[in-house]
Image 1 (spheres, helix red, strand yellow):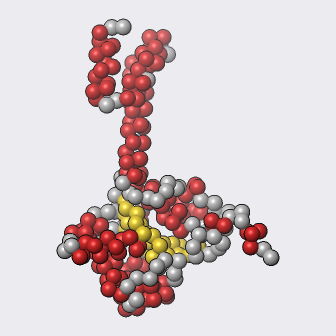
Image 2 (cartoon, helix red, strand yellow):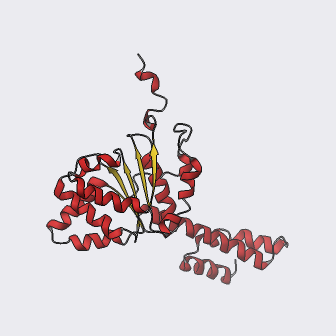
Image 3 (spheres, helix red, strand yellow):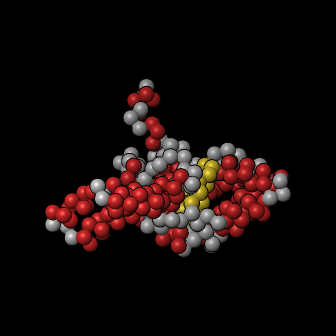
Length: 250
């Protein structure tokens, strides 16, 4: 084993090129046998390193987005919700709506896969280097209330404003006190026509006045959300009950 070979291995470690190092012996053998040129061997090693680095970046971006699980559109069983247009959902993963600061709202009864699809689009965004953040509506309001009590509301709102895409899950799952709903309105107003938001809700917009305890504020919020928005209504059985339908037969 030559001294330069050992030095090369150490240099690859120092440079943080594990894939390059792992494939080095095979590449050297291929060049020696004439199966590959030096340039082809170097490109093969470099491309594998780039692919591995991109996977690591993707994983990091997804992890810091706080998704509750890892899901893609391909994981969704459209046969269980046949009224959904698969191509329409897939089109959202091209992320053009983020570039135009548009919004997406998934409406439907519990268990129809709203959160699944929101996460799938969010993961696509995170993997394409869009700063993405997932949070339930009630957790978001709790965070804003805490910041307000500490005199840090403006700072917290500005922090959430930095995300290219926010996913606010379960809007309307629990009632919101009238004073607290104003905190969410402030955030939506700040992001309006600047950043994108995906929301999921089991309540139709006509019930948001009840959810937020203030019909006028709810209407103002809905107005901003819907101005540049794709609304997807999911009408069907609970995705979680798939295969368990017989349990409810008489």
